[in-house]
Structures are given as structure tokens and as C-alpha cells.
Image (cartoon, rainbow, N blue to C red; front, side, top):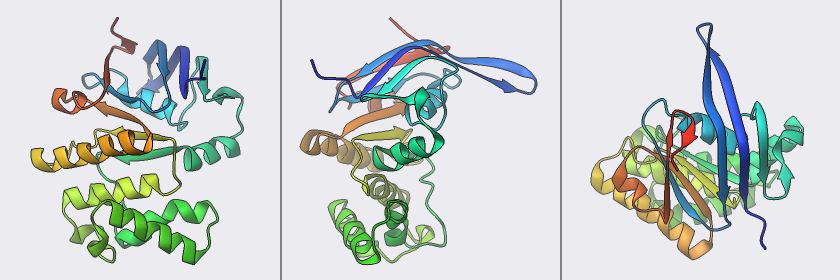
Length: 225
């Protein structure tokens, strides 16, 4: 039996807000197979962002087990966690998170700098990704010169730069109009189908979640049964 790419068992996460402890994740159980397209739904405050941070190794559980492939995440050093974030997981955010004074091409190159690729290889791979996502002609434009949909395409290209096995998309259509949001979801769906990338979309939009093969709902830090 294949090892799941994500396996969470009884994961809890608490944090303090204004002196008050918030129990954001309450015994989360989640298994994701390689090549799945999963949508995690839930209203604001349900724990979706906390869960994404834990899945993406941006934060660690307070208790419970989290295996990413065959790695026990809690046992990894900070350097090992950083390596996993750069090599295994690609992040796509609602607000794009592009560097404002850096061209589209240079934004895509950023993860490749951390991966130690030389300048020529970085440029070649970044150009290929922008071509794949249909935005090569805007490679030398700044984010402020791009539409929201174009910025999200650049952000997806950047997320794919190190050929991750998991793409985590947090409200990827939240700042886009309906038609552009559909285009972005088409891209994610194609990456999942044609390249086998495991895609996890965090969303509160039913129409976005419907594009995934599996949908689960998080409420008050727990998945609905």
C-alpha cells in the first residue's frame, strides 16, 4: 500500500490572541494520497489558515502526528523544514505575494536562487514556466503592470519553480473576478491531471471547491464527518 503524501493524526494547534488562547485545530485527522485534488472548505475562523500553515510546514502541531511522505515533520530541524518548504511544497496565496519591484521573471526565479541553481538555469526554467502559464510576453513587467489574473499566474509559476509534489493554494481566486478565477482553477486542474501534482485548495467558495475531486469541510477546528 502506497504511503500517503500527507498523514495527520489527532493534530492540535493552539495560539494566543490578546491574552486569550485559541484552540484552532482540535484533533484533525487527514490523509491525502499522491496526486489528489482536495478542497478544504470552511467559514472564516474555522481553522483553515492554521491547517494550511501546518500542512505547509510553516508551523508545527502542538500535539499529534504529521507525516509528510515518510518524514515525521515534528522530528525535523529548522533547516530540514526550510528545505521541504522549498523543494516539496509550492504556495499560492490570495494576495499573490509578489515582490513589487521585481519583474515577473525574477519573481519566478526566487525559489531557484535558494535552491542554488546558476543564473542561466534559473532564467531558462522561469521562462519555461511563464510560457507554460501563458504569460511569457509579460516576463519583464513589474507586478503593478499586471492584472490580478496575470499576477496569480506568475505566483503559480513561482510555486512550481522547484517542481514541488504538493501545491497549496490559499483562496487562490479570492482577489479575482469570476472569469479569471475560472482560468486559475483550470490551470490548477490541469497541473493535477497532466503532471500528477497534489493540489490542496483552501477556500470558502462552493464553486471553487466543486473543481476538486474531494471536498471536506472544517468547522471550529474539526472536520465534519
